[in-house]
Amino acid sequence: MANKPILAGNWKMNPTIAGDAAALLQGISDAARAQDRVTVAIFPPFVWLLGVLELLEGTGIELGAQDCFWEPSGAFTGEVSAAMLAGICSWVIVGHSERRAMGETDDVVARKAGAALAAGLSTIICVGENQAQHDAGDAGPVVEAQVRAALAECSADDSQRLVLAYEPVWAIGTGKNADPEHAYRQMRLIRDTAAGIIGAKAGARLRVIYGGSVNAANIDDYVELPQCDGCLVGGASLKADEFSAMIASTAGVYATAAQ
Ligand code: PGA
Image 1 (tube, rainbow, N blue to C red):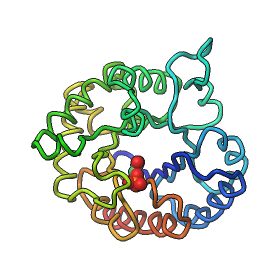
Image 2 (image 1 turned 45 degrees about the vertical axis):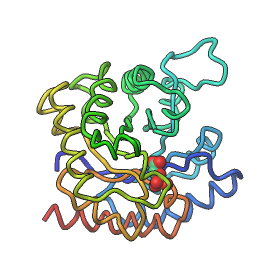
Image 3 (image 1 turned 90 degrees about the horizontal axis):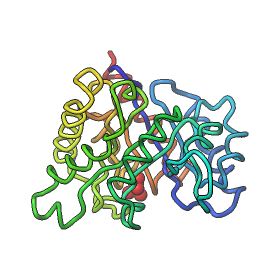
Image 4 (image 1 turned 180 degrees about the vertical axis):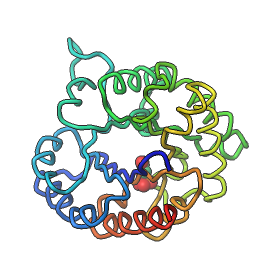
């Protein structure tokens, strides 16, 4: 495997109290420290980033933000730039479906991804079809178009810091995780599409991960897939014991694969 797999915990707009954020981090530290096969990254809300950063030392856990703005600075009330984040964290998520649902277009996602990569951040770009598109049999074309649009400002040089997350909208927060066979086909399409845009070598180097109702009971079904370089986890990343179990089992799967 060219790239180290990643297990990403997207905390979304949780927890609401700083002390709970610290406790959650402490609750997963032992599991993260106990392995080095998998990059563990957590994505707390902006307001907890600095506090969590102070507690990360010695854990091996990497820090990321859930979104960024493409302009480096200026009169953009409420926004946080990729350049600002680069001083605090090493990761950012762009194009999450919960942001797309609030009006974020493919063009906006592409600008954010371009700015994030240019700022030196490792960048997770989320793509995925919604329920209606899935039911209509359009999952492939929808995801392919999203990947094409999102990579508009990316180049082969970005591939080591680029992660494409297949997150079917209907699987997020619903408990209806995607059939691994479907996820596999979509992830292969995502990698092939990316390779067609930034080149075969870069396409092989970037990481493709799955997200959508992943938990300790089903994570092995995804990380065992040949195209899968890890998972993006929402709800289950807020439970320290469960996320710790996921870190351990993911590390175990990749350790076996490496033999
Ligand atoms: P979920 O969220 O694991 O709660 O389904 C995944 C995500 O939104 O990234």
